Image (cartoon, rainbow, N blue to C red; front, side):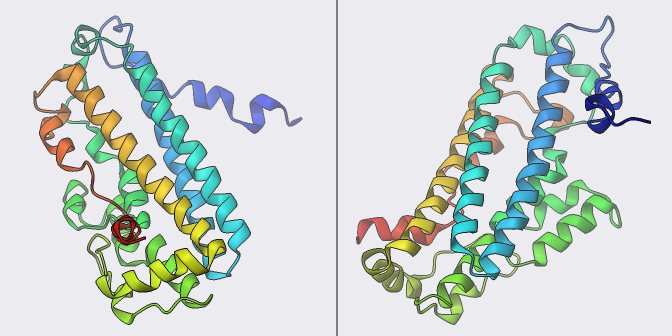
Length: 259
């Protein structure tokens, strides 16, 4: 069979994946499905790019790492922008098919959790959303034990003129914590090593972008369902608000006061 645009991209299979559950079906359920499927595709690409970023850091490829971070940031802007489309759906429209979602919830997105873990926002609580022995849980358990992007950055910095204290690497399976012993050396690097400073500023851009995405997501949920419980009994807005303003790379924010 000749390879065509349609066969290469599996267009028939792709377009068959939008299957509404509501009676009718309700008009806006199609939008809801498409938006969330697109998010899952972007998560897949972000995981792919973040894998590449780790490899470039390990290979001391600063130019490649910065280019990859630039792509991750551009994709993230697109992800944030998609919320504008989702917000064209009114609360009444969403409620017309919400009950058909049953126990499904965005909290179950294993790819988003996987990407969070890769970026350093590790914790074992999300594992409870996936059965023991399932492929999803095994994936998250593996990511939980892998070095995060920040650990990759620290390794890169340590090989390129920055004295990184051993305790800065002690991340384990918890979110990346601030390391006071690392701060003086980061401050020196910002003043004396501008090429490395540029890499760290891209990480700050990424951190800020993730926080923007979380904020827009919280406000989108609030304007759609208020403070009701989320789909599948998830905590909803109250929980989502607690995720705001938690930096991925706290040391890069702490040094702002001292620079």
